[in-house]
Length: 242
Image (tube, rainbow, N blue to C red):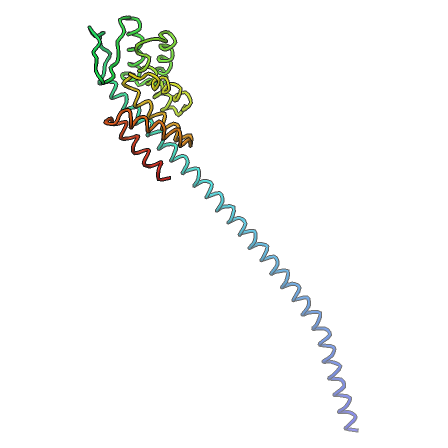
């Protein structure tokens, strides 16, 4: 009797334990699914944050690149202005003079002077727009007008050179080259060495290394003791390293 009671109690304990396991199993599966969803959501959130960080990094690189390009452009503009100011200063030391009594013969190129007062005045007015008024846009138009009115002027080399300088300062390298080529074609122009040097610089900026070296070489060989030759030689040395 007591043995049967014990057996019934033991069976009851087994049934209760089995029932507990049946109930606990679904609960554990539900918890696992919930945990998986939480981890998946967290992973998606982290992925989104990473994407945002990657985009921010790309934006910063883009901004940094623009800043570097702008800095380079500003540096180039300042360099062109500096060169223009230096050339203007040199021009101010060589004012237009009256025509010489006789043409001197020497190995050093000399500039001729016109007896046409209208031609002299037109040229001097264009020069004054640079020297006195610093009106570079007005000077550009004035020199263009001068060369149109006086295509065979004795001032053509100088006018073309300064027009080339003005275009160069404005970064209009195509027009600058056209005017420098005019000067380079005039063998006895005192501006020829500088014009050839500028043509070399323009060719180098256009990634035409062969043409640039050709211009620089002409300067070095044709004007060996000039400041332009020293600059050309330095440019040739730099190009030969690349």
